[in-house]
Length: 241
Image (cartoon, rainbow, N blue to C red; front, top):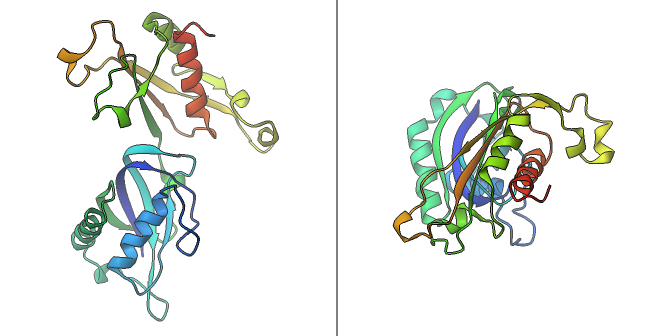
């Protein structure tokens, strides 16, 4: 049977289903490699096949992502439901990840059908971007926030969001020219929310600083659509567009 795992991680990249264990060491931490090495320590008999629910992310953090794991026992015998205790499997993978100083944790795991694909089964995907205009970013906030040196107008940002929030829009201009003829449909409905959470150690922050989060949700984002859409919204808020 196939195992579906729920992951959270920080600062890793995603590269599809390819493995790099036999290749030269790269400066990029690939999510599949980290997970694969942990599983091989847990069960070294057979290299697993790992499939993520997405493959367009790079150097991001995830509160929750999903992946499927397929691995066989010696003699090409498939793993049965009764042959693996899921809580024990999750505990040992997390123990290995902690011992190897990896910023990834297994939130949950369960058996699914062999034909289950996480990318096709995903209902929607949500991206959260945190921005800050105060240059004195704390050590805790730095890896989780993006610093903006140009002043931000939240009223302009609200106006820009209202034009596209929950509206069916053709985002073909966000795709590469050579890929447009391959896409059957480039229309998407994106739910965009703007929030202004309080900053950590707010009493030490400058009164003129602005902290806000953009939350974008869609059933199926186009390639790099989230990054480009977020960039355009920030340009509008900065008066550059």
